[in-house]
Length: 203
Ligand code: SAH
Image 1 (cartoon, rainbow, N blue to C red):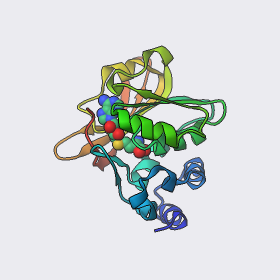
Image 2 (cartoon, helix red, strand yellow):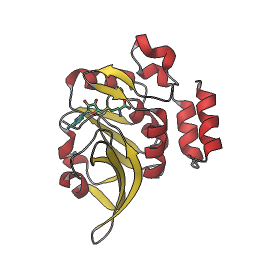
Image 3 (cartoon, helix red, strand yellow):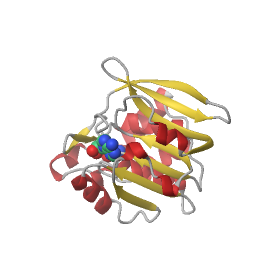
């Protein structure tokens, strides 16, 4: 697969209707976030290993999550699970110059990998910590995205989301994860399901 064939596939399948997501995808080089041995597979529509039991997610999964997040320029965004930094790079494009992206990675080596891959994305800050706790001192956030399988919805993340803010998170169900889009309301939350996906577990 090539970048253009993936874009054509999404348009044809009606999967991605958000042109801003397609533009971000076409602007960021996925190959720059992939270990050398797999680089020629950069535009295969499947996850690739980045070591430490982590993967750079499948492109179709990434764009579905980004579309559900409905990012506006200027948004302050929190990502849990930096991995390669690729998704953070897309978030950076969608948030624009006036937006900020904070991405948290638990594994030190992957934090370093993401940080070096994201050098030229000036609105992104990388943090080496446990993302389940969120990032209180930068909260509240307009958008939060979790890119590892979660046991339920972490309370800290809900607390750190603005009213009308959106959280996209894969939550464990039987053998896979149900991708949830959660919108925080003045009283309570609204939950929508985006279907079943497979993710590496949140530590
Ligand atoms: N978004 C990444 C892919 C993430 S894979 C990309 O674009 O490449 C999931 C990542 O979540 C892994 O790197 C894993 O180490 C990390 N992770 C798992 N549990 C975590 C936790 N509690 N806090 C932060 N990161 C975590």
